[in-house]
Image (cartoon, helix red, strand yellow):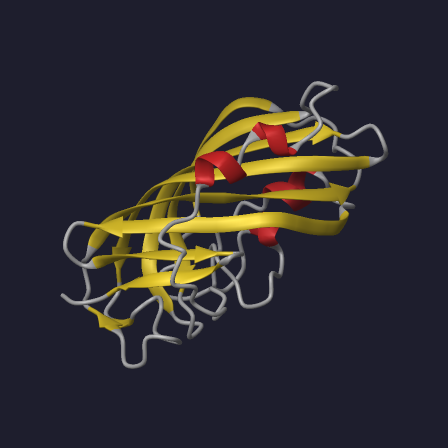
Length: 205
């Protein structure tokens, strides 16, 4: 679950797509530029540098509906900032398949709908800072394997893997300075959901 109305538990990926205003000049969000290690002070080595595969994640639209099922590779890098805080860069890259119903941008594209089975690609992520203590005994580098969130067409995800609460169980003050995702299809349009605004939509059958 990526995008948000109010960013609750972004580290757990539990947030609903923001029905923020659409800005005509926003044709895409530059994920490569914004979700980049340069957003963090790297004078100290990373304490977390992991990758894992996620399947069956629920993707939220601007009406609060689950509009797609997502499968992606997630990369999490966390650096200590030397002042008691940590800086995280989290990236997503993968694919989605739509459910029939309201389109992702339906809150500002009145009556927007999408059919079941529309496929496309997604890229995105976020940068954030927080305080906390790194838990002991965890794999902090390399590939963690497959995580099946098992969401289905709801936000009940029994297999959710919340990296933030797992690696930093006493985390506090989570603040994301940037978040955004690009969604692309062949013939059904594209959609941007980002901190700077939403743009486009994915509709049709």
